[in-house]
Length: 380
Ligand code: GLN
Image 1 (cartoon, rainbow, N blue to C red):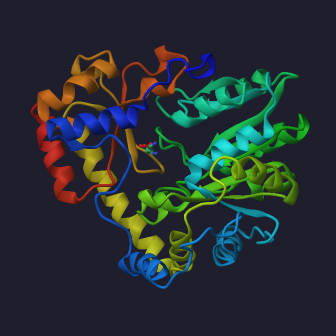
Image 2 (cartoon, rainbow, N blue to C red; image 1 turned 60 degrees about the horizontal axis):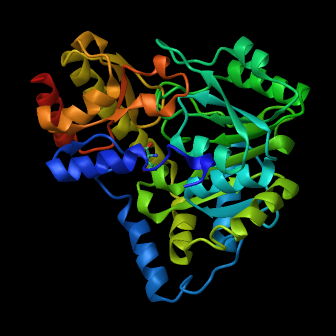
Image 3 (cartoon, rainbow, N blue to C red; image 1 turned 30 degrees about the vertical axis):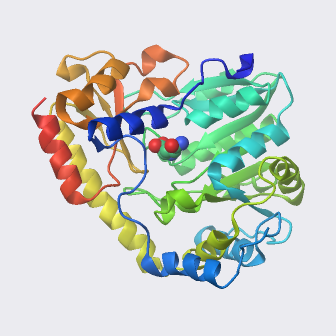
């Protein structure tokens, strides 16, 4: 393994999901639902395979039907207008969109400011691009960005801001006044922005606002999303980028040599999924909100300090009230102690002190599974 990737051997998700399987534990670690998405959408994927749609290499930028559905979604939800032919790129999940964007836009030595804790692929892809990450730590209890600190982190080497809202793992959803300051700073310092909005439809107490909709941002923002979270098909790995023709062309150049194209038949199904009526999105959100409350109440009753998320399907907790200090040790022991798996947030930090005692649980599981997990955790 080269120096750029030293220490990044196995992702925490792979490690913890393997532990869940080996111990037969309830897996509230890696974020994937235990119920698949809508049956008509699954059927659309099967029909595409059986009817020979997308079984051979689809077009590099993605099939036209999906690119059009993505632009309609951006227009209908956010009033953002994109040209499906020049301003959209379909990727192998948001993960490839993140990798291709960073590889396409960064020069070695550039600095990237990202909220910490950061989703693990950010650190790895910034490193693969030869750039340097500069963390802006989101601090408890509210895990909101300190925008004066953000201003102070910008240097002549800063090339781009990597934003994630709703934010994994804290559940923070950036509010319009915060987005406004971020946009002003980006314009003032002529920075590019990559915004990872894969949890755009998983918001509870507030609305999701895309950064690209702010003044001056459309032309400097690469927006990323994915079907995995919104439609509960994380295994399909269909993601996308929307941006200007120039930035999309740059990201497409990198994507060409990573995967060339993304799997074909699922693209037809996701095009249909994006056109589902509002009732689907509202019902999905309401179901998750109930599960969030169930898990938050259960974790509180079990003695954790709970930070209620505004979005995503994760709850971050502090284990200090349980007499614990070290999230990694706690998560490694938890399956043996009570048959539950969680993720130690510290792996998403450079400033490890800020995350040492934080542990993340997902609530995208059936109610009875969450109830059983809570019952087990209460016996700790
Ligand atoms: N995004 C999911 C999570 O945060 C898992 C993705 C992965 O396994 N890389 O849990």
